[in-house]
Length: 305
Image (cartoon, rainbow, N blue to C red; front, side, top):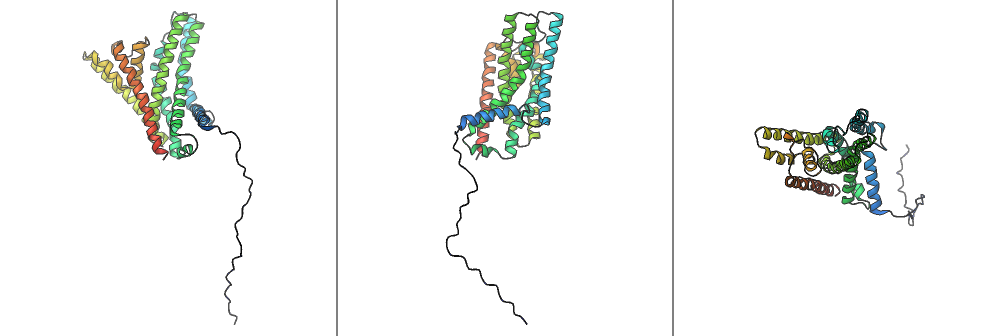
């Protein structure tokens, strides 16, 4: 009967077994573009993404559709003005964004979570901060990109109105003044809405929750403020109407432009805030914008740890 012999223990070969394998990697000896280039690239990418550029065809549908919806009423007004040869446009430049606030709110609600929620969901924010880019660079790029996208959305129909007014041979000076006032109004609106949208969207990594939260904040506040203003006006407390308007982003913009930009107010009775009250509106707007930026900085400093 054969006896199974145990296998011998292999003897470790003598000498150092360390090997260095050259697999073809080469060090980068090109220019180091630094933080400013990374910040500009993030801004450009985020701005393009706000309109679905560089993304799938499905991602382009909603932002492009909202852009068209914003511009079509302006084009119709221009066509009517040219055909009927009226002496003025049916809607002031400063009133257009207030009338189209539902479209603007939907755009913010859809694009603010798209800008930041995916980075939070897939935990890519720390990867950004592992490079020369810092928290302030990320926040500024995202804020500037969404504000720029919103300015394009809100200023494009004003440009359509302005060009149409000139084609209709309306007074050049009046139209240019109104167009400039409208641009100031939508610029402030873009900064305010972009800040609020990004702060709300940065709370959750889930895009659907972010969309619902942004819509809820913008619509509920406006509905509640408008209702309270109407009640105050009916009860004769007209002095309280301007102060109630401080608690909604839409009425904030309405108050600023009616106080300083010559716009007609949408407040009950058509009476907007006085110049002194309008100064408070401006301070509140600037405080909300600055507070939104500060909250975003605080949020992403925690995320980037």
